[in-house]
Image (cartoon, rainbow, N blue to C red; front, top):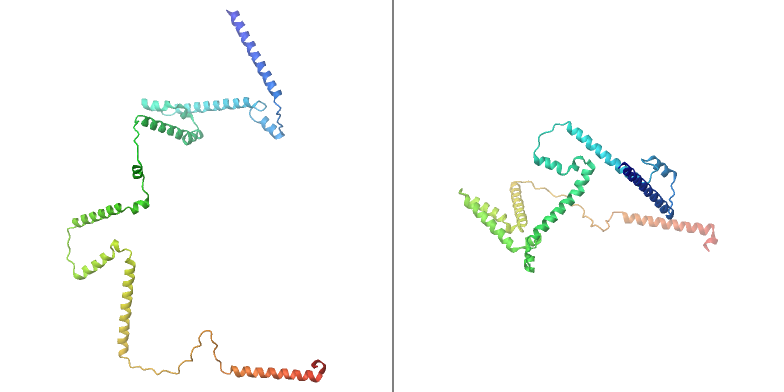
Length: 303
């Protein structure tokens, strides 16, 4: 039995060795057939040598990185287990135990993994569940009614403009307001006695605040303000006349002021024309004097 075991082990070792040689030969053939030969500068070489697993192929480095990640995950799980073992362990029900064991991977996930799951994975899963539930609900109800154009228009939601222009809606609102007003009036049992002046004031206020006359409300208010201003001006004029009725002072008017010159017209200034005439006469005399001097001392220039 031992001889058979040794023989099988030797055959397995020889088979593994042959596979390894064939793999190396295949890689060598692929490298020889591939004309691409990248050129690495000194910085890239130093980075590759200084990194973890420097000098190894890319596949080997990726495997080593994956193995390291799994090892770090196991270390985190172990540390979490040790930390939980030192904590208080309350007695939990079977439902809580099922919730904790349904997804054990979430107990050891990092903050980054939890963020990615909540932001991307969980919404997609919920959308898939919702679509599946909707499809299942529709599959149980094969009835598909046919809706004509009128029903489709009636079912279409109306816009704000259509709702504002709806006469039936306006009528319903008006009737509702009137019903509310009547209900309010019926609920009021107090009936005070009003004088004629109070009734007149209340009638004016009610008429002024009626919703149907809102367009002319500002005009009526301005008209009332003008009337009050005219009454105040008339009363002030009457008081001034009464105050001046007993006044005996009669002032004597003095010399009237000179008439104002309209804009754009020249104002007459006394003595200005005489002054200009004198200046013109003096200029002529100077010109005649220069002409006589030129004729007397330089006759050739005159000729």
